[in-house]
Image 1: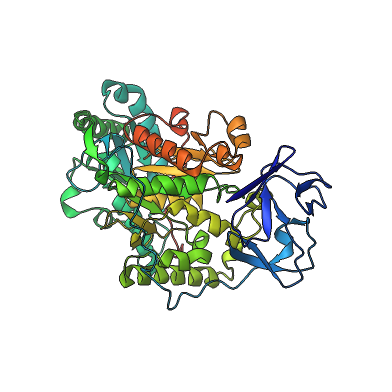
Image 2: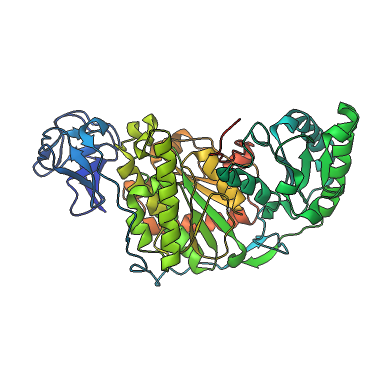
Length: 508
């Protein structure tokens, strides 16, 4: 990454072959940013400047990658925005090279342990939560009444329990429960019953007539009166609340006995996601997250990154890091499934990015994808998961999910993620109730504006005040501290999004 300064204005050119740069601050028309390049229009923060004349049909290059082709002649110094590029054809998913870029020399982590809650099976918990999973949206209202009462009267009695969380969702009935794609939301909810932060004491609340039956949601030996309450078998509102309170108290007594102990990072599962991205995402927050991910993987942790449409245009680069043919084939299969899923609705990957992404300088999905994959670091990719699947390997994993913040986060939770790192350039108050979320800002302006919502500021990378490695190491230490119990900004203010299953199957 090259940076240049002229009268306090910083521009960033990522790759030697790039014919565009972005600016850290807005640039006024007439400003000379480098020898022979004078800006022809006022250019907003983070937007692209042509570093040479680009003829109609010629490639516009950033990250050393063709973002698209010029729709008209572009003059040196022009502002390049989303209206000036033709989207290129996506990379082929057939015959991708694999296992040709397997990095073994990963950076050395400062520590290799954290303070977590051990579980008999699977990853350790970063929080000690009474989780309540529902079979159907119909129980949400009365469950919320009960949870409010639980938090007011029961939770203070059990100081070792962090929270009581209801996994409410818009699923369970009025859906084609036997459709092939229904496997995804059912798998997600089934896996949430066993989430590591719930400590094996999850409550199940059922209505009684829904399509998502108890047998679909859990193992047979868990379907007992100690764990499950069916509302249609209880006489009225007050009795239902009373039964929920009794079950919760029994569970809370058990959870209160859990204690944090020092554990190897091999028992930690971290998720990486970005939302509200901007042109700085791929040069500050995401590369810093990628460096911290490499530290975590080297220490034995499991790290998952996601968002199919935000990987699709860099999929060939991801395939090169897949450890074997099986992993590469699963990657291609997930991409093909999603291509078809979009095509069935007569859309394609160009439906992403958002207006906010474009305002932040991202012209199209290719540019967004090249910045997005930076968060995966350099580690070999040992496994690819379908949405909501649990990993069988440890290391760097691609967990295929939609790019929607809420759906991606819910999918990663279902895969066993116990702490998420979320990079944002435009800013979002995103948070998850079942796992802590560390918010990483891409630029100084965002941190200054949202000083109490952004946990880590990667903006100094853009201004040359810090390196990717420095911010990445700081983020690694933040991950260890939060996994060991320290609150994030989202937790402090109890900012939690809904659990949102990915349901590509029909609603009936």
